[in-house]
Amino acid sequence: MEHNLLIGIKLKSKNWFFNFMVKKATQHKSVYIGISIENIGNKPFTGATIGKVIIENTNSNISSIFKCLSDYNIKSLNPNEKSLIWLDCFVPSIDGEYALKLDLTPVVIGDNISVSKYDPFKKIPAISKVNGLYETFYVKNSTDIILARTNILLLIIAILTLLTTLITLFN
View 1 (cartoon, one colour):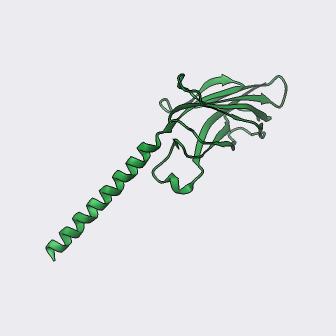
View 2 (cartoon, rainbow, N blue to C red):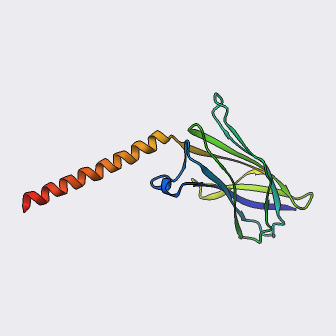
View 3 (cartoon, helix red, strand yellow):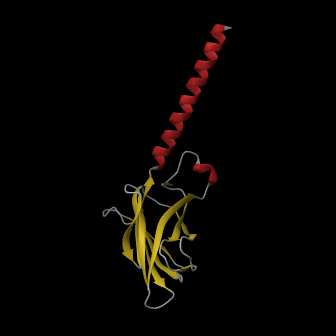
C-alpha cells in the first residue's frame, strides 16, 4: 500500500532568550530538530519507524556529521492528521547549509511511504523521496546575529537621544 506524507523540518533554540530576533539555527547554539508529519493521502497511515538520522554539513571541504543513536516511532495517522516529533539536539560548529537525512521503515512490511516536502514557491507539496527524507536548512553565523542585535540597540539609543534632545529644546 502506498502512503503519502508531507514532512517538514522544525528548528527550535534550546535557550528561549536567544530566540530574540533569531528564527533559524545559529552557529555554536544548541538547536532542537523536529519534523512535522501530515498524512496527505486518502487512507489511514499505519505508522513507521524513523531510523538512521544523520545531520551533516553540505560543504564538501568541511566534515561535520551528527548521528542520532536512537530510533523514533511515527504513530498511525488518519487523513489530514498531523504529528510533531522532536528528534535530537545538536550544536552546529560551523555556519552554512546542513542536510537532514533519515530513513523511514513502515510498520507493515511491503508498504511504501511517499515523502513530500512543501514547495515554498509553488505553494504545493512536491514528492521528493520514497521511504526517506533529505531536507536542507541553513545555520546562521553567530557573529552576524550579534552584529545585527548591536545595530538595532544602537539605533534605539540614537532615537531615544534624538527624542530627549527634541523634548529639551522645545521645553
